[in-house]
Length: 296
Image 1: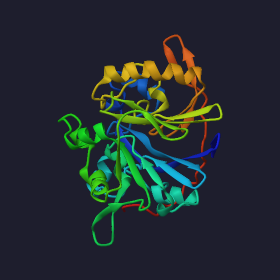
Image 2: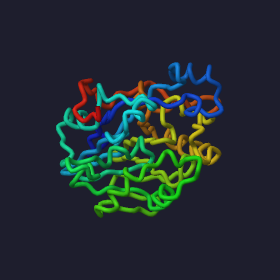
Image 3: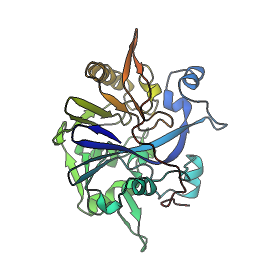
């Protein structure tokens, strides 16, 4: 656990999966990204985390993102090398002493399936329902519009089953731009990866942690040119990194990496060309165990 003022923060490991390493690192040559991150498998996939963030204070338990969820078909699980044998959303929450009913709010950085897939589940009647029955779910309204009418480039990243049941249930709250969602929890809106993705900045008592979502999905993506081919507007991502990372360094923010299978978090170190991730920080040491929420 990490304390940021009055907030208690934990990472919630929802499972592991794999994506194409070339797509994850864009124009960066394979020998460079393999050295910076990890070697690819025979299908050129690199190991990735689906790491949510839990923020607790007073009677509140806020979850940021929900991972891939349990709705994928067996074919999809094989394509994405989805593995919940060691971690799942449910088992990680159990280790932290929580049930789905205890979550009071869910902040969705964006609606790609690896970030919002765990927001809904199939119940005993075969119907799609919100995974967290007591929670309100928060997303940028501009991003929801995009998710409902994506381009050919990013259509495969969105699945209506991850978010339309939330809208139907009346629990999806639409936000309009940056600001404090709760005192000490600020949303920063960026547009390079996808339209109106929201980063989450937790700040109190002179301390700050930024949940990077897909601005810097891994520690290896901190250097300015390391930008995903998945990004719709990579030059916008570059501008956003050049705006946000210097402030993060100057103010000593901790950066939490959603997709890094090896590094949960780090502060920044300056270089001649920008920044790199510094010494890895462990926010929560969850024990690996058979997942009880697996779709298998």
